[in-house]
Image (cartoon, rainbow, N blue to C red; front, side, top):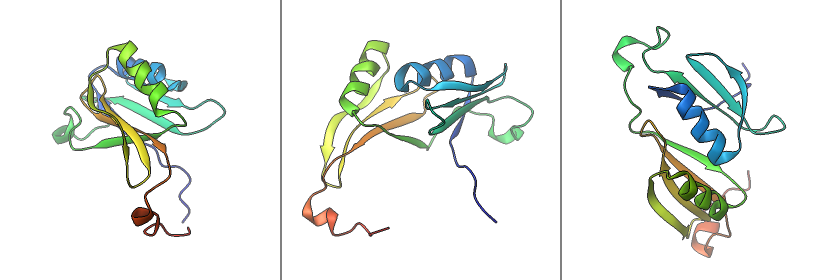
Length: 136
């Protein structure tokens, strides 16, 4: 068995609105779109993200709720620029931009359905954390 792709799909009350948020925040482009499912990808075939109508028949009935307990992490090359874009969009920032000893500059924003999006930029970790990274 070979894993050929892995990407988050959030459930949304309004997939078009949610897709527009990720498009505007991260510069993702539509890869597939219909009225209940929208897939986005970074230009050039990079990372992917999708959103699905949460009450669609393909979702088991007991799980057709707003997203909770999930953190979508997106790695970027300039977290400060994305933070500025989030502010311009009026998106609720739940954790302000800050540097972490484990080697990330990041902030957390809430998407239109309430999912948390952790936007991270790799930075040099402290010596303590650098020792915990494997060579893989």
